Image 1 (cartoon, rainbow, N blue to C red):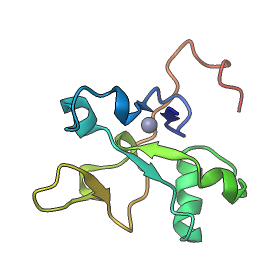
Image 2 (image 1 turned 180 degrees about the horizontal axis):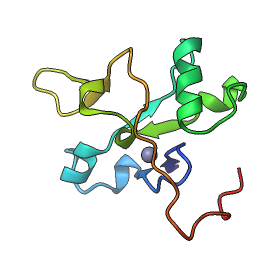
Image 3 (image 1 turned 120 degrees about the vertical axis):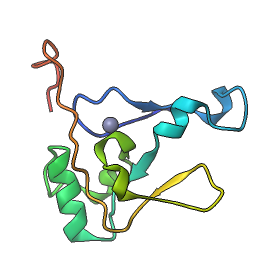
Image 4 (image 1 turned 30 degrees about the vertical axis):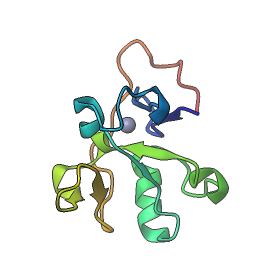
Length: 111
Ligand SMILES: [Zn+2]
């Protein structure tokens, strides 16, 4: 299963691990991480949904399956574990860098 970033116009997808040549992340993977929506934090969830131009009343069972890629966050929104490559979002992080649809793709994104 390939996860697609929930932000409209964002082309980023998460490749299945088994397609990678090694267990270690490639340089691209290192930059791009995917994050679940804060379904247990209604206030922050609302800000996330607004950032990706979704209805704030979007059903939670769908929201919990959505992922947002790391390109919508500032470097300061991440905390890095010592000696770990994988990045984690801070519990206060809110998407602040929406990826807007490119010119020419407008109208194809019927949401
Ligand atoms: Zn994205």
